[in-house]
Length: 609
Image (cartoon, rainbow, N blue to C red):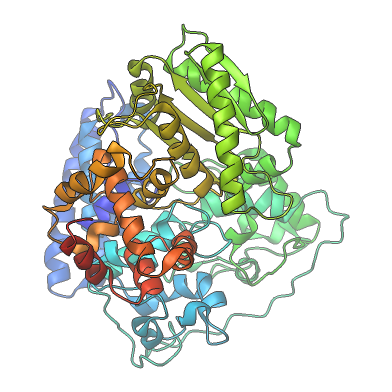
């Protein structure tokens, strides 16, 4: 199932079915027996769903989840039996049909309509009606029924790249919300409203009571507790997961500040100025035992006291938009890290790079001290001689000057903030350790270097083996390899997650190979052999289609092929589109006007040449 793949392979950080058992953990016999009984109850859910008795199926699941909460099983007792139970529980929950109108539409309304509503929709994509969603926009239809792995709606929500993830400039959606959307698509993306042209979430027979009006009072600076800094972070990270969507826990949902003040069916959740009359204070601070938060999440007493103080001071709002999702108020870990880096001076950033480089090397070879060479734009570190590092650093500066002349930077901007670190190893074993220890991957014999540049230059380095100065039909020289890797780093200097074929193809074009080079002459034959077994041309542009040892040379041929169909200007446009669009096939089609399958077929017909 795609859902298992989606939530266990890193697209979204939390696993959907797997709970890793703690070493030597053992459940008490009575708890193990109860889990067995609960699993038996879960077996009834499948037949109830088939008979369309969904409400009864949901009641069983809720009963089981509530009982697990009551058991409060300690982490050090969770063994393989518990892991098996949790896996079965999640599989069972996935059987419940997902309602577009009641579950998916609220997520889209809260997070997508500011950019994709009726007024000036981005990329010509309207998502305020179901018909607008299935019609799609200039980048295609965002939903592929039954195939969440091919649906950009899910891919953009779940992307680990802040520049690609949607909602734009907002925090990543809760994993639970992304799972709901992915499950709905996997269940064929069915529509359960009455009118496909009606506003989403408003086309069912059920009439909801209009929300009661609230008075949002903006902060004036006299407060001792900030909602934005002291309250919103734990509300988002601990509470919103249960109190969002169309069926929030206790029928009290708050994804915005206004909804928080509106309260739920139990009464006045928050009464500004009166914590004693605010039900939420009882739940998190005064009841014995405390009722909230449920499950294993823990709220510090200092946080609960801060909530009480904030309410006593009038429950003032110090954000920008009380109607915006609370998640937009709380910076993500990546945003906090970016802000910290942005606040550094150039000198601090350069010192940080040196410290990071030393720390990385210690992980690779803790007993070996490296030699160093520092230039304006590079910090070389390696196990070759000082003379060799100095020679390579001079070549690197010359090559960078050529790159910046052909591919200019914005005025006043440095090529690599804090310098680009360049690791050069005398022994191949040390280079292979970079891949084994830092990248958790094997090193093909034909691969002798790689580059890594993350957003905001948080991490920026090239790692390579000094292969020598003799070029052959099967190997680049050290200088050519370094030039290729530096060019890849320059292309991805903004942290963009570009396809490997594009990065390595561009790097090889900028490596300094001459037209009479034996290596260059051998590329077409090797590339042609590498692509000869490809049966789906459209996948040629996707990462993972080519082996690591093939991607550089095939990438070189692909870059040449694409430049022959529109010149450098069209290719530059493709690079720009790929920075925005994580779907390489769609980006290629957007720029070249032909489908990825058509272009791939033309490339294959040329024998990869």
